[in-house]
Length: 149
Image (cartoon, helix red, strand yellow):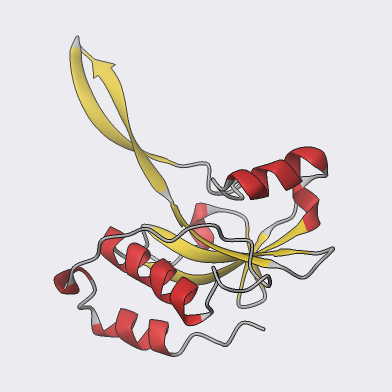
């Protein structure tokens, strides 16, 4: 399987992810055409577990390691060809769902992802409030992300 990379380092376990991260913004690059796809992925998900006949909500690691996208067009390419036709790069780690939503949407608008054939994205849909993205470190990181070409 093609690995996730972050700043040219392979990320192949949860131990290599910065502490307090709940998810990341990623970019897939379709090797055949150079087209890109920007997305987000949570590192953890909630599951219900029965303990002593009581239902408890627990946090478990998501499928982020093998994940590519929830996009039907990306899934179609993977089903026809292979997951290996994409390079997977993590652009930014986020510490809240608000940061995750904002960063993804910001990137999609910044690169006009819906208006150009350079991107495979089909939609943009989020609702983000200012107080969800107040952390100074995050604001600095999102402003200084490298330009995607």
